[in-house]
Image (cartoon, rainbow, N blue to C red):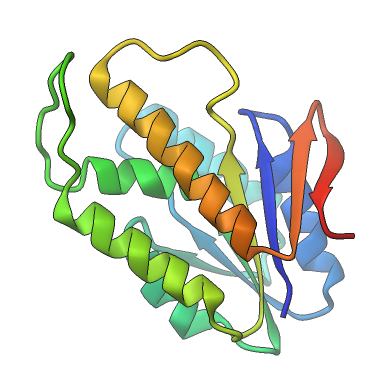
Length: 183
């Protein structure tokens, strides 16, 4: 089993690199999409990503229960690609529909902690190859507003935990890969 994490900024080419790796595996590809079309702009982004994937790939749309989807679809005969962890994290952050304050401490929803823990536990299980895509959001200025800072902090913590669990970690900038861990 090989777990690979592709990190990068928006439109850095991380998804394209992850998709090439999945295609090169020679295995059945299962694409777990975490994005949810909450508005027209996001629907257009999802449609663009769909149009870029081979039609014979199986797409599973799962915005919240990522651990369960991985447990169901991972196997030695498949290459599973998850795109993307930071969208999933955002879905969980806003899963209870609560409004967050501009200042002060942010109390994360119970589902956030449960799904994150379940995902990391499932990632540790040897069920087959998995490729993960995540945004690196912590390379800019500190965001304005408590919920934005909380999101950036949690994305950084998640990326660190996933990178530690993966055999290979690749940072993508301007479409160019920089291997951070593994071959």
